[in-house]
Image (cartoon, rainbow, N blue to C red; front, top):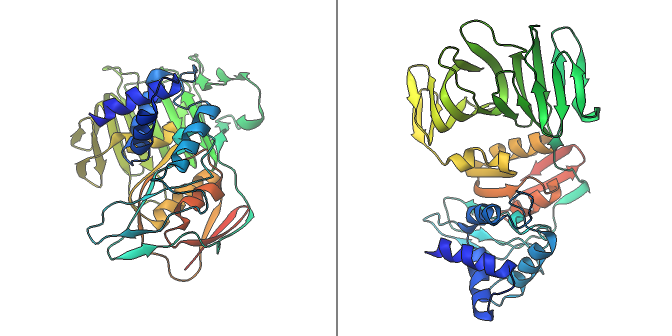
Length: 380
């Protein structure tokens, strides 16, 4: 019932009809780790901003954050983290961030820290060094056609690029034509891009990814190749199946929405099904399942595509997994000096933060670092 209460209290807060007693109750619910996804969902349902986005207006977000920080049961903004104990049963602990998240309520990047033994998490001690910050990524890509023509999409205005390809604020659209050629759309680190193929299939590329596609699908199948991570909403056609090649995996669409993660520096390819059905090898996935190395398991699909909603999502992730994602999005090189910490991380961080702000959220776990423009060095 608490989720229903959160939705009601959020509406009352925005409409300024909330009582003092309910206000305190609202603050207590908001800072619970399970509330982050509900807040994102309810803000979108209520369409508070009027834009179809799940972000709250700046002033409302600032007021809520201010109220939480001033509550007697919550930390003051003196330090970035409060001191906490992590117990042996690995109970998740919420590290309450202050200061860096005043822009949006839903930038409450609830972040958790787990490890196998007793440990006291000390308040941020200022040992970390920011020489030059790194900004978050944004839409952009490089499009290369089989005729050798290359387009740097970041610098081009909306309109026809030629060869039946349109660029708009919504992404790149391949128009159906008689001419058959191939294109490669590549998102460097720090970029994302949406692509609409000539058959109506829509593809979103995460940072550090690419897709090879034809201008028009001919023959008995529709086949594309990807590296990195891509989310597909396929226009199904029984007579012309849609096939994604990712590493050594061949993924057959059976009418579906799915995410494929196939970065070269990851251990294996992961295919996560959200809607419909896909076949990988001899295995057929159902919604909510993920295929990896011949094994199928149930997963949190919201977490798998959190990047589409503007969040990093970590589940039992080690420091190198966390840093690989940060490195791709902020376009920084990760270096390690000495022993690599063996902590595990769970939770979400908003991708619109500067890198220094994202790093501040995990600094209380004992991770030390130096950030100098495009180089992030992790120290023991």
